[in-house]
Amino acid sequence: MPLTVEQIARFLRSVHPYDSLPTETLAALSETLTEHSMSAGDVIYTFGETLEALYLVYSGQVEIFDEFGAVVSHLGLRNSFGERGLLRDGTAATTAQCEEDGILLLLPKAQLQSLIAAHDAVRRFFDRARAEKRPAADNDLANTDIATIMARAPITLAATDTVRTAARTMAEAGISSICVMEGGTLAGILTTGDLVNRVLSKDLSPDTALQDIMTAAPRSLPPNAIGSDVLHMMTEYGFGHIPVVENGKLVGIVTQTDLTRFQAVTSVEMVREITRAASAEEIALVTARIPKLLAQLVGSGHRHDIVTRLITDVADIATRRLLTLAEEKLGPAPVPYLWLACGSQGRQEQTGVSDQDNCLMLDDSVTDEMRDGYFAALARFVCDGLNTCGYVYCPGDMMATAERWRQPISVWRSYFQGWINTPNPEAQMLASVMFDLRPIAGTWQGFDALQTETLKAAAQNSIFVAHMAANALKHHPPLGLLRGLVTIKSGEHKHQLDMKHNGVVPVVDLARIAALQGRITAVNTRARLQAASDGNAGFSASGIADLLSAYDLIAEERLSHQLRQIHAGVAPDNFLAPSSLSDFDRSHLRDAFVVIKSLQGALSHGRSAST
Image (cartoon, rainbow, N blue to C red; front, side, top):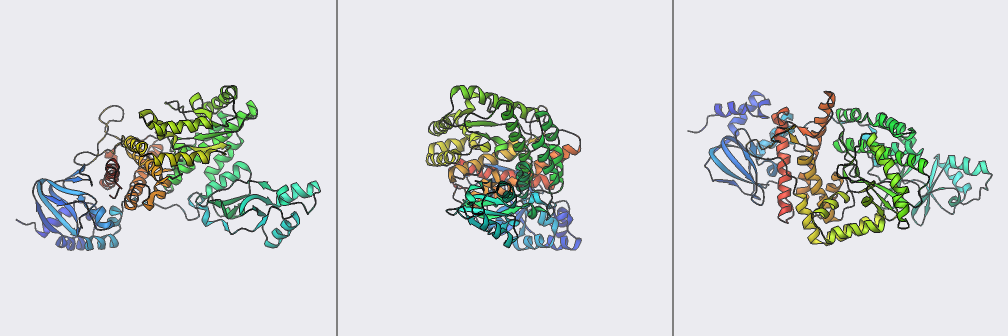
């Protein structure tokens, strides 16, 4: 006997988000839904098929398969399915088959879209990027790309122009600095302070060439840097003006005046204290406040990538300060070096729980005596200091204190060549870590070339990419039967999800493969995925879009969990009990894990992901 409208309405009152609808809307919706009986083994729809409606399980059970026939979910009473493909391009992103006799209710696409447009609760439920999240303030420096606040098309002069010309130009334009160009490239910067300190105070001729008194090769930032990057750099180095450079081209400049209406007091004050610290113990007093910083940032509605970037900034600056203190103790480095971070610091993805992963690239002129003497002492000083500051020693000894990770750049080049040419299990593991390297301090010369040639060699070696892809599939999202979430079975974290290793890490691994295939130099996971969104990195544009949304949701949920722990006076960790979530959040989290599993399925079959 067919269901009555009253039975359907009563059922909908028990299903979110329909339980939030006004009585009259719910009654009208009940008349719109159509009933469909299903028997075990019936195929409801197949991957790529055009969808006309959303499916809601009234009774029975449904099995969901990815593009390649792998089971990704088992759905039962009150679960809905088909919405991802229906709301994206109208084609099924999965295959659905009846597992147990029952009844489905079908909601036509047009009616679903009307509900989404008219009712916030429905819109939030079907917004797979992230449910309602309070945005940060519009004038929040930490959340603002500097492209929106920089002065565009800054006034420039040639390196051969004179001090007289520069002074006259700055006076007429009412500016306090001028960028000095040489062959179309930024060669230096000159400020009004330089005119006083380097020209007037030394009685230099006004005909002195700018190239003789400018600050050569000034530090710069890209336009996609955030405002706090500017303020942190200004605070750490005492700058008042920072050029903005994109692909080697000067596109703007940011000054202290540009930042007056923005505030990022908390993180900037931490940077200021670290740069003045005289010991690791003093730095540790600052880094001990990181949980509070995380709580403030997450609580005020910052995006997860902004939060982790600001927290990583603190680690970067602590590292640079420790290197300065080390050189004050040991003396200047005998040859140029580059200190790099890998792991979460390298990707700028640190949260309230982080160890240290770092290495040293030394100039090829280094001797064994220098490497095992001065640089070993430097590494020990910094790594010990980081441990004091709460960045505990890496359990796998991936630190500059290990001789293996403190080598000339030529040795590093041989490391990467060996990993690519012989991708055994150890090589896969090491490559996964070291492909996330990011320079922190020292001399960059040689690193960019090494990164470019390594990415090129890796992308061209299909065997290496295949092995790396297999390695990337070792971390699985926690999907299983019924409600779709599998928790840890025993031990301290029984009945909890590991949001790092089973949530964030699978996305990190997929993004790294995209970077290898697309020769993407970015190491931040979100930046890698955004760079891969053109469909030229082995994954389709739609697959990357879904993965970005899934990553955002998982990362936000992980930070929200840590925020709740901090508020409860508990040390933050990565273990989340699904029972602590609402049905609404559990449903979204399950869907995010399904996206990851689908992309992993596509990768394992050597196909372009198009979930």
